[in-house]
Length: 232
Image (tube, rainbow, N blue to C red; front, side):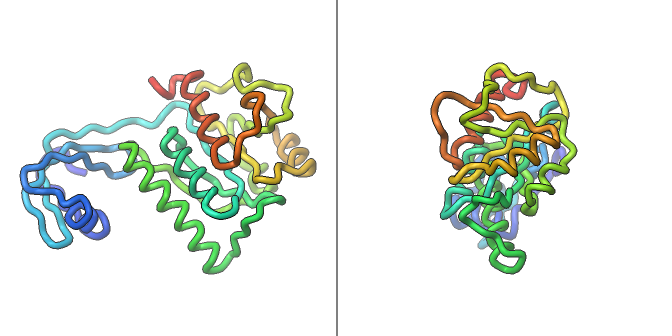
């Protein structure tokens, strides 16, 4: 995105601005590239599916020192997409779909799986725009439990209601990557817990109540925002 001059919105973004938002000439709007740069721009021309703007002010926001990745177990219905939406609004930096043993939903390696992954990615983009975030979370292809255990992260926290360690007091890294692992509706199996623990994951509980798979990640991100410098 240029520091000054003209920016043309076309494609899906142009159609959305022109046909859905119905922006008008002279209107000032906020746009972003999804990787940290945002700008206040003034609309100078509106076409059928394009919007031409001129940059008034531009800023680039660096990513947080501590990046948070949500390893979200596949969930039935639209609960997986809800989990991505809420986590994005709460500030997650990346999402990894997890093929947990007790996940009701199953993403095939073919067309159905590709469509499901596309829905999660679209949900992240739309939620980031709604929250006016500078960064759109990356949504990776799904991983198995061994794949998840093999990730090179600075800390991995498995959210487990029966854990002895409290999320409120567990030591957290100041920088690098923290992975939050959220299990499916049926919970995480003992075998999965053992594999993740052997790889260095620590089980923690968020509180006295059992949270749904669609909300646990967002609640944990809120707690992280208060405990770390992620909220400034």
